[in-house]
Image (cartoon, rainbow, N blue to C red; front, side, top):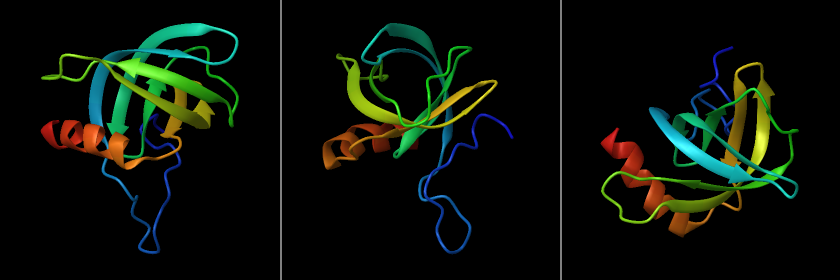
Length: 111
């Protein structure tokens, strides 16, 4: 399974709830114990996949900061690890908020 196939909610039609787009961008993130810097592999309005050799346990909550083209400030969001594999980890934005969607959806549309 490729890293872009992390578990997002899948509807009755078998399609994912959100479209994912490739987005190779640096990301800073932290859990309660440590800060990390890796790269985003892909992103959707519901979450993202982080390429890393140091995947955190499923269920772990993290704070993330990453640049958004055309926006002067970096985007700061929270998430929860929903899947890990040898290539990294899938993170769902948590809690999903309308503010996050308003910030992330235009980014995904641009990609």
